[in-house]
Each structure stands twice: as C-alpha cells, then as structure tokens.
Length: 164
View (cartoon, rainbow, N blue to C red):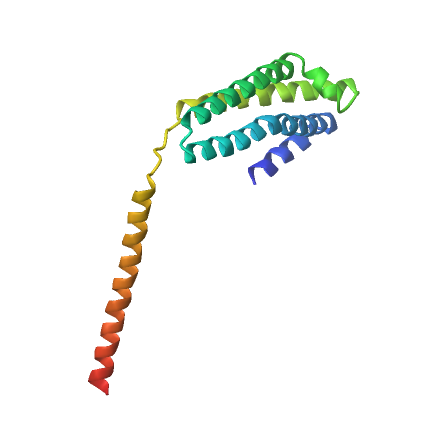
C-alpha cells in the first residue's frame, strides 16, 4: 500500500517525474540482481561446505563473494551517484527524463547505502545446532505426542468401561 501511495504522489508531480522514477526503479531492479545472485549462490555453497565439515572452503567462498559484491557495489554506486545520466541514457534519451532519472537514482542510491549501513550495525551471528541436539528435540516431541495419545486412549477406555 505504501508503494501505491508513493506512486500516486509521484504521478501528481507530472509526466517527467513519473517517468524518471519509473525508469530509476527499473534500473535499480537490474542493479540489485547481481548482489542478489551472489547472495543466493554464496549462501548455498557455504551451507553445503559447512554441512560437509569444510569450514575453510565456506569461509573462503564467503570472503570472495563479499569482495565481489563490494567491488560491484562500489563501481555501480559510483556510476549511479555521480554519472546517473549515463545509466539513464540506456533507457531514454529525453534530457528532461534523463535528469529526473539521475536525481531519482541518486536518491535511491543514498537511501540504499544508509539502510544497508544500518543493517550491518544490527547483524547477528547464529549458532549451528548439532545433529544430535536436533534428534533429541525430535525424540522429545515424539514422546510428548505418544504420551498425550496414551492418556487420551486411557481416558477413553475408562469411559467405555464405566458406560459399558
């Protein structure tokens, strides 16, 4: 709903502003594909290596993935913030729209940078639960269900004996 409210406000500013924000959003969607792909592939690779007990390979892949994403982010961030007109020109050649796209991309790059900086400050590390602890939790759950079922059956048989 908030996205619709933002779009209605932008649409009220006119055709150039609306086109500028629309192109900027498409451009940012394309830009975000690369870090998203790194994130998904590195997560899978690291998880497989941690599961296989190869923490050294997992750490190496994580470091390389972060480095590659950071390098891409710095280059694209620089292009977006200081040379947004070059990126905007890929989508539209109208100077007014290119200027609107450049302004919108600059604002989006600024907000994304600050939101990610806040996410890094709030990052948490999660421990990996050993398999035997998961097995104990599962066995406890099964025993609880079996106990509840046994109590139900006992109560039911006592009621039948009393009525029968």
